[in-house]
Amino acid sequence: MKKVLLFTGIVSLCLLGCSVPSVKTVYKAKTNQQSSTSYVVLDPEQSLASQITRPNCTYEVPYGFDLEGSDLVLPQSVDLRFTGGQIYNGNIVFNNTYLEGFVRFSKCTYSGKIATEEVNLSWFDFEDGKTRVVVLGNTRYTLKTHSAAVLESIINACDGGTVLIDQVYVTTKPITLRGTVTLKGLDSNEGIYATRSQNAEYGFINETSSAFIAESGAKVSMYGITVLGYMSLYISGNIWEKEYANGTHLTNPYALCGLELKPGASAVKIHDSTFTAWTYGICSKGGTIGEVKNTYFSSCRFGFYADGTNNFTCLGCRFNTNLLNFHFHERNLDNYVNEHVRLTKTDGDQIRKIGAGLYLKNCSNVKIKECRFEFNFIHATLDETNKNIDIEKCIFDTGTIAQVMIYNANAARNTVTSYSNPAYSNINITGNTFARGARCDFTDSTGKTSYPGFGIFYIVEGNNRGSTINITDNIVSDQMEVERGRNVKYEEAIFCIHNTSTTSKLISTGNSFNSAKAESVYDIVSGSSGTYTVTTKNNNNGNLSLTSGNSSVLNFN
Image 1 (cartoon, rainbow, N blue to C red):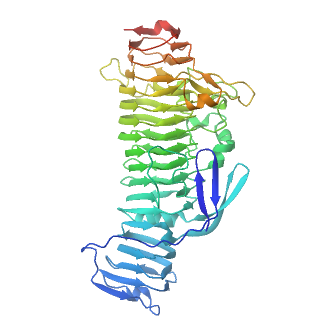
Image 2: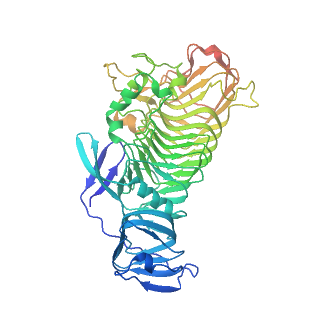
Image 3: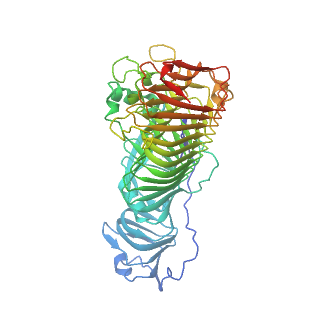
């Protein structure tokens, strides 16, 4: 068969015509508890159901056995040892079943529990006899598709174990996860920094629905796999433009997820994996997350979206070109609410919903460390209510609208009148490096040149919800990778602030802004009111003007 290699930046999908050898199981010796009490070589002249009758036995499968559509309900804790045979064409009910040898099942359905610690998907032939054409640029790829129902049953039968992903599997329906399972690329490598081609030969493509949905109680880990959505959608942008030209995306998003965590579901560890071309690469709304490490998010509307999700770490991840469409740079601000009416700095309520590399909403106790952000609509957005958020030692390369957006103006949540119960508390953005520009110098669909973004930090405060934001030891650098290779539009300000509150505070300490091309450090958007308190200490602003706009709103202390 052909092995599919997914280079999942924005760049290409490559098919390599190389064969995939059959894989023999290699396992540690069984423990005494796992050992069976007798050994039976199965007879091809008799049915399996008549021979596999005793629990705790080892059954050797040397020949092919056709179940002829019947059920094979296995006794408890048997060992199926494949020595050249296979089982096909039936319904298999595992019962704490151990599999070993040259395992081969074909055209079956599965339920129950597999006891083998590591199960290779290549043991199961579950192609559905169909094909799907994947279009990338001017190239069309015809790929065989696989039964999502059978794949789902195999994965859930491995509750408590690991499923080894040995190639790329194409499905057209989501896989629902219910137990505890680890999905791992067969020979995946653990990196020290996420790259677009990491472990690209192991994974899943689904262009028509979400890839994985973890239900309440599910605990999933992923190591070294690629999860690819509708690539041509995100390259061409045609469907996005039709869906969102009238602004309906604000309330009715076209929502497909690489991994969706339902409330009560958990992503224990996501390491060295890639999520490309989804509405949400990873989406957690009330789920729990342990650690996301060395993982690549690309070509999504939102790369990593966390709502009501607490106590997790995102380490060494890369967020690249997460926006509605790769060619959407200027149109991101056009045609959303009214035809050709551009959104402005006072439209934060709508801008926060368009897209981001990282999106945190109603989260607490989150650490974002040593990640890289580049070409996202907004690199990192904090929305509604967030507490104890640390963003540290990250690289923020050229973005589109802003590099960090903090939205704290929703009247429906946590309205406060003092610092004692703020909607945002202990938000620490520390030791990061920021590019000077946030807008690539492209033109929009009408030929107009691009505009500067809304500030390196775009902050919207309102409704006296309260916030304390700590900006410490950050650098705006003139040596960023993208700036050296492309023309960019530089930010007009370091901090672009739209304020209608009296209970918000920014503490800026030890930052180096002197290399910025901005006109001012603090730009207060026209229409702002109230009081925005700023505490500054030991910052290097170079020759930048301190304030611009409605500076009377600022209260320096």
